Length: 193
Image (cartoon, rainbow, N blue to C red; front, side, top):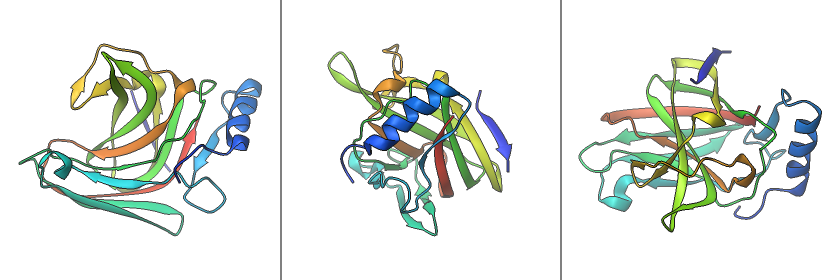
């Protein structure tokens, strides 16, 4: 269960990877900042992908300004019905952490966070999805335990393999709640907890 609390291509810097292991070894309750969209944290190389890759009609885009990723557009279920922002590939070991914490402000719609790894099922790449609800117009911390992520491929839930947080290669943020209409989400930071 997700908890809401109101309140460039390449490899992530080695310092971030080392901090992850060291912080987790000392105290797994310690949060690790992955990005807060400022020059002090890694640029994860975000880019947009809408359902037009499969003939859909949804529109969405993002910008990064004032230390926030602003994701907005409109979904159209007469087609794929989704919009997303994804990162370029990286390598990250979060095995000493329990999940991700997102600081965000949104519109009350249901969103999906995606984790990518090197895992495959029948030769095809597997991603891992976890849906979460957002309060309408209020800042909130959304905690998503790694245990809540399920294997996924092209719209289908898979039986396996299980997520390995030691093998993360990318993130994604989706609006795919099977509803038509405008959406907006401001993402302030992403942490591992």
